[in-house]
Amino acid sequence: MAVRRKLLFGTAAVVAGAGALIALVLVYRPAIAPIAPPDPKSFALAEVEKGAALAAVGDCAVCHTADGGRPYAGGRALATPFGTLYATNVTPDAKTGIGSWSEEAFRRAMREGVAQDGSHLYPALPYEHFTHVSDEDLDAIYAFLMTRPPVEAAAPPNKLIPPLGFRPLLAGWKLLFLHEAPFRPAEGQNAEWNRGAYLVEGLGHCGGCHTPRNLAGGEETGHAFAGGVAEGWVAPALDGSNPAVKAWAADALYTYLRAGLDPQHSAAAGPMGPVTHDLSQVPDADVHAIATYIASQMGRRPGAAPVDQPDRALKAHPVGATLFAGACSSCHGTGAPMLQQGRPDLSLVSVLQEDDPADTIRIILQGMKPPVGDKGPTMPPFADNLTTHQVAEIAAYLRSRFSLRPAWPLLEPAVADARKEGGAE
Image (tube, rainbow, N blue to C red):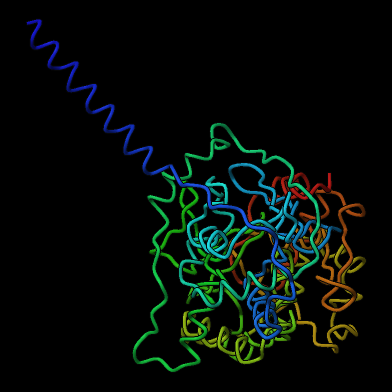
């Protein structure tokens, strides 16, 4: 009996030791030796310019710049279902940025989610997409970032639910969801389509927002581009289930991505606003390629006729109708001057056709502002002028008047939640 007990204990010890060894192998990543910050003049101008365009495709500035902060200096709060992450400083500051990172360290961070010191990075950096990006393009982005002004700025500590602050756990996440795969052009597709696929699936990481995620935060790869959530906003589907009244075609997508506005669809709001601003700085051919690829994912479905039922909506939501007439109709009413300037009629805008009212509510509460400077779609916020009940009434009225889809349920709680999440309470 004693011999059998010893054998069991011995076996358990071996299994536990093997498990610990495997876990250590999965978790451990060595530090890469730091370097002296490279001289910005050591990078060729053409490579820096290429890197600038690629960084714009990747929206690097969107996540790595805090509101009112210095470009690429980090500190932006990124809300996730698991807590709040703060973007890191990617300027060439040696103390708080990536100034001491070599090209090798930068590539590893982008593709494997491992920092120069060997610590694991959270997948808010979409390294599962960046595995598709070539060495040459990553080196160009590195050259661009290393020629930015260094800014000393440490990111605030993340605020995550326990135990997710323990970074070694991320090794397990990567085991499940990080599948390194260099981009392979598709046979039978032309060069423009393949260029678009490379940019959308790789640097553009469009699926990062527009694909639903599972409980562990991994993309549901079997439902690529079926719609997702970004910072509390609905990121609409980019496949055949997209609810737009007018089916998206490549030309309309190009206009929207380039200008942040398409008269037959929508104006870019929320996190999409800065994305379209960045794409306005990308080579024209690349934006055409992105539009071509996305349009191919959305398929060819027939469009629908716009809906405008003011009498029905007035009868169902008289309070909403009155509020709309007072607060909204000067810009969105029939014949309003803004409609003559290219803004889409409400009977065409996509957010009123979505199953989730989140975007409509957030636009009413927060308004819309140009991503940078004074160029781009603008709408004033109404969070301080309308009560939660009034916002819900307007949303219900809009849905009833401009869509044949089912009424949105539980609008007031949804408005209350949006106020809290948007800091508008």
